[in-house]
Image (cartoon, rainbow, N blue to C red; front, side, top):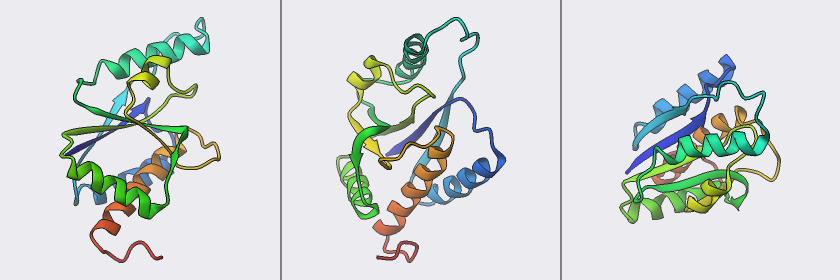
Length: 157
């Protein structure tokens, strides 16, 4: 299984970049993992939020094959404990999924077409975080899931 972590635009803050790189490097000890950056849209001042979501959605959907699994990191998604997240990762690995795309939306969320294409929606919290911050939170939780699956001492419960 190859995990693609899809981001709209680059991570701006150096402290977030550093943390993301730290956990990304750790994740790669367990599974194939890559970061896919969808470039920020240019000339958006004449577009409304729906048009921005639509254009971002088109860029995202153009990267997917019909057999790919699309998981949206979305505030309306299912919330897991860290142990439940690990169980879900194991379930997906057991299903022999080839490509799973975890996607952080842009500042305005996802288009209706992206929601319709999604196989799963995952929420990391009931709280709202910046789309920059959620990147670090997700890779840390993904790393934590793999340490749980491998009975390593990172997670304490």
